[in-house]
Image (cartoon, rainbow, N blue to C red):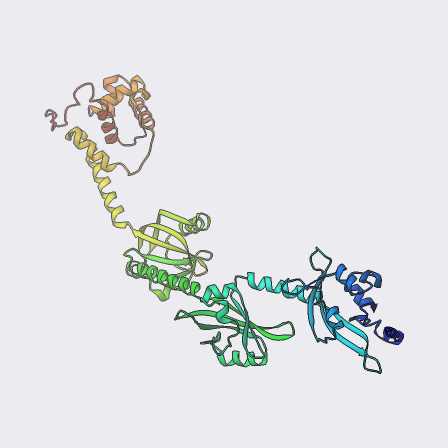
Length: 505
């Protein structure tokens, strides 16, 4: 029995003319698996210029192009879209990745099929319509990678049914939810807008698919309890589906920091208020008073309403304008001050000698200066009276033993004074003679007589000794000499009443 004659091919000239200029790719396949024609768009989507490069038939196409599904699994022979359409299958959308064998896929195609039948109902032409979705899927892959790698917690819900379709690791780590516990659940089951400041507005915007502004909310955690967050919503599209991207910021670290800051500020405020020394807090830039403590008011007599808000330059606090400027310059430059003596004026016009110390610190976002004043007026007065008394007593050291003189000299010496030690070797022979007679208690006139020199010469010798030893009082000079074993060459001159000189041992 002879085989039936092959069916003559229909004239597709007009069809080809119609579809040649379409942006969609169109491939025509004959029932005998021959690739009959492809428009320019279809060729470009395969990276070829001619139909021959595409393949003469379906077998050659499979040899030249490797197809993979979106999950990276290869499309097996017989399952290629061309094979399926030849088998009479029609489909509205198939997505495959296309590339050369052994190479990475270069294009992503979305295909649908058509079957063109002849008048007798027998297929005359099989059609594949190809859309290039490469850019779209590349963009989705980039979004997917960015979304998953973003440390900011985020979750996406589909607006059509308000079910979650994506969640990143940041959200899972922040809340303790798992991916399986979220995907497919609705916003009614896991409410990310719970406790939101403007919940009604957020729900309204979600229903309209509009941007949800930032607002504080409370997320219920799967392990129990809640977490304070800032939530915001941004409408996006995934594929062709409208969605809402929710992003979150964990407020717990900020709230802990704010709580710790409040506690620190409270402790500082209490210490500042209860400090027994006068203190004030001012800005570093303009030295404007921000606060004073109780001791400041009690000792200086300046009340809060008289000082707070005013600059130091506008207050009568520092009695010496030059000293106040030096204080401000020191703080502006070094940022601190330690134990500087400054006179402070009280509200009644009195002046107190004060030791002033200052330290810069930051309160909120403002650079401030904490200034502490120590009233040393009484101490300086007592020290002055003591030194005057010692000076008066030491005018005649012959009444005191060496031990008593040394103790008085130590009391008189200013604390912390540093000077290079002087030695007897620094004095000339004549200066040592004069020093010995001074230690014997002789006045300048008697020393001149004893040495046979003029009184002016004696004065010059004494001045030279003072200069070399850095001593400026006769009593201190006698103490210095006796510490080094100089007692004088002989007895002192007789007393004025003619009675012999008496010394206490």
